[in-house]
Length: 153
Image (cartoon, rainbow, N blue to C red; front, side, top):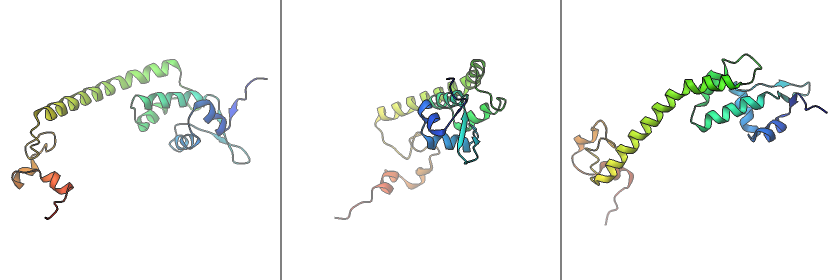
């Protein structure tokens, strides 16, 4: 017997490994689509499995769902992502991912330099106080004082 052309939400969840709640969310966001039966049950085309694989792979590399949705919006209705589609999406996101990697590396390096110096000078530190707004309060750990109230003896 050939496999069913459509899947219930439970079958889609089992096959994709994605919780049903996430599938409903994806549908509300326009990432996947279903049709409703006369009993108002969702039915998904089998090709939805490929869309979900694309969504999950994109999320794993840090692509926000809004951007995933924009790219999926370029597909004709009901069409699953093809290999060529994945290659084009990857090319579009490579620059954004490279920029994010560079930004994270700069943040890591800046933080490492800061913890390495041991100064804890919150009024001068470019990492904690980039606009130097605490200078007007004079010396001291003003941010820590606000977080940890002093106990009176």
